[in-house]
Every structure is written in structure tokens, then in C-alpha cells.
Length: 236
Image (cartoon, rainbow, N blue to C red; front, side, top):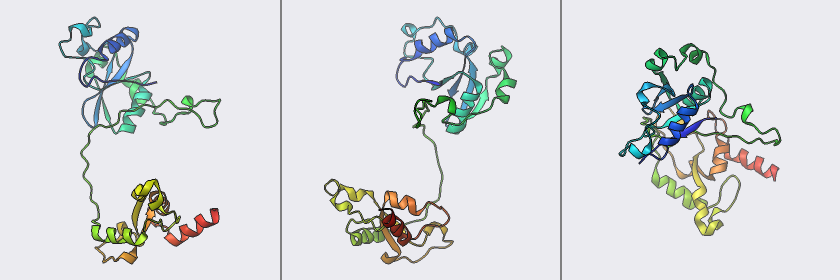
């Protein structure tokens, strides 16, 4: 089981972390240093100072100012880092002082995010205890193909709020707010075009978000809207 501690403003979790250090002299944890880097330490790492340093003497500082992930095993921490896109750097001082076994860390295997050991045997669905840091800021550079706002507006007006695939009238859902679930779909998959193409309103279909996802079940070949219409009609 992983435990997450972070004091964004004051020492809310400082004493909790210190108590964990006392109870787990051989414990291991990660500190999140950057958007893609986490450092692995032993609970007695000399950088942390004494376990007697409590929140009453902090003067606005805390050991948990940096996000900390406390773990039971190298494998658990490696799995968390892999899922979050973090590269783990091992504290050389902890290796030197014997708080981290670098060989064991390198040989430790990761486990699936929803590991079987976390599943409830009594429930056929299973209950899972999964935690992860979210909301970390990352810089992402990507290319996207420009869409025409005027074409979108024309297609939405033409649809009159009705999904072309499932035929649900979203203009009557939540006093008209349901139209927010509608999206414009290019019948000829724009992402596969090598050069810009001339598009008119008849090349577009207005569908709800669920149907749009189904149309793109195969990322390399979108399903024709008419095919999805027939499938949904046969299901009903």
C-alpha cells in the first residue's frame, strides 16, 4: 500500500512522516523532484535530519513540502513511477549508508496498476485501493489539425440537436444543456489526410460523445456513421 504526503502550505503531514520514519527504520520512499524525476531514499537518509524535529519548531518549513510517496517495496514504488512517467534516481548516500539495496531495487519487478492482490475475493467486480499523484504540471508539445469553427456551427445547426448515430434528441435533455454532449465528426478521417482538404457541411456528422468514441474504436479506420446506426438499431 502506498502512502502520499504533501504539505502545500504548512506542516500538516510533517509529524506523520516523522512517526513513519520511527516505525519504519528500513522504510523506503520517493520524493517528487520535477515533472519527470523522483528520488529514492531510505527512511533514515541523513538529509532528513533527526526524527525529533517536530512541527512545533518548523517556522514554516516541513519535511513534506516536497511530495513524498511512502512504499512497502521497491516494486510498488517502481510501478507508481512508471505509471506517472517518472524516472527514479537512487540516493547515493542511502546506498552508501546501507538504507537502499541498489541490487534489490534494480532487480525488483513492477506490478500492474490494478494488481490481483488488491482485488476483493468476495466481490466478482473486485475492489481496489489505488492512489496516485494527479495534477502535476507538464509541458507537452503537440501538433493538431485545424478545424473550421464556421463549419462546426453550420453542422450543429443542421443537426437540430440530434445525434446522427443513436438518434437521441439532446436538445430535449436537461432543458437544452444536453447539446453539449454533441461533437462534430469528419466522415473522412481528417487525421489520416496527408495534405489539407476542402470540407463542406455534408462531410460532417454530428454525434454524441459516446457514439463518436465508438466510431473511432479503430484509430486507423473510423467506422461509417451508417454502420453504427445499423448496429445500434439492431441492439435495440
